[in-house]
Length: 334
Ligand code: KG4
Ligand code: ZN
Image 1 (tube, helix red, strand yellow):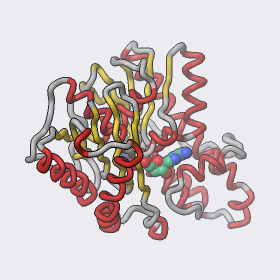
Image 2: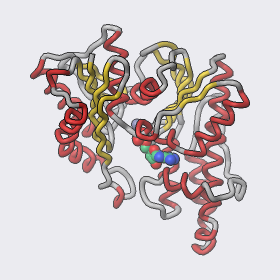
Image 3: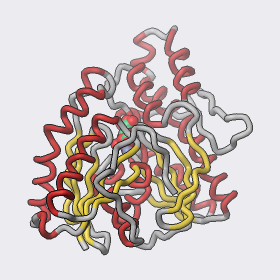
Image 4: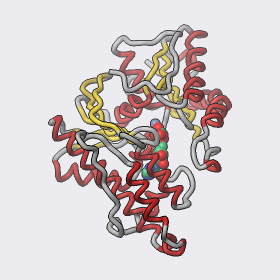
């Protein structure tokens, strides 16, 4: 069985083909750079670019795999959550393919896609496990009870971790997106240079909150001369990053403890972060649990993760129909 996965929920256009052994036959990704000059994603620009790129990216995925539409058994597409204009491009493209070929179509939740990215490279990963989904749009701890069965343990009450990275990068004049830049600069900085707050949400130990941390960085920078910021840029990045990663690591340990599980699968754009990988890696070693991350290419939004989620649902007899619609808000389905 060969599944085509289509992902267009935000500013990546991606089409991928996988087989039923979860082998990736192709994973074509176009990342929009057009948003850099605006300092953040402009939804109108994102959806227009999706329209321009969807067919070339689809063709590229077919050519790389050496396959044609006839070879495909099903089409999986991200239908929620995300930017509605961007989502609609992928959903309508997928519906066009399904309508013209009569092949089954399945709508996939983007968060579920990120979780399933780990199945593609860690074939021994099987539910139950805890997943940390950490990206520009989401920060969540999810209990993966079984294939396609999820329980949300906690989520961010305000900003996603990636959003906090991007906003702090903007405050430091590093441009957009800033997560990878802060990661790089922080490697040569002192994480104890300044102690930024690690916020807790009263009554909800699994909930994340990052907007206070971002404000603390803004207030700290406010009265500092440019020369000071330039001189200590690495240290400020490392101190911010250490506060954010401490807060995440503590909650992951708590989730494993509370659920009694010993496997953590991290996913999403911020899963590429080297300090997060090292912090959770060390915690796993001392805490006696396993942690896995996708390779860097599968951390970012991609069609292969959507195909993997689609494959698991199709195997269980699920599919959507041509009334499939996109939704900006829908939370993780169980
Ligand atoms: O998963 P993703 O590609 O898109 C969303 O679904 O949001 O994640 C993008 C986010 C951006 O906020 C970006 O700054 C962040 O992931 N990011 C990183 C790193 N690489 C990407 N954040 C921290 N460290 C990184 N190395
Ligand atoms: Zn994502």
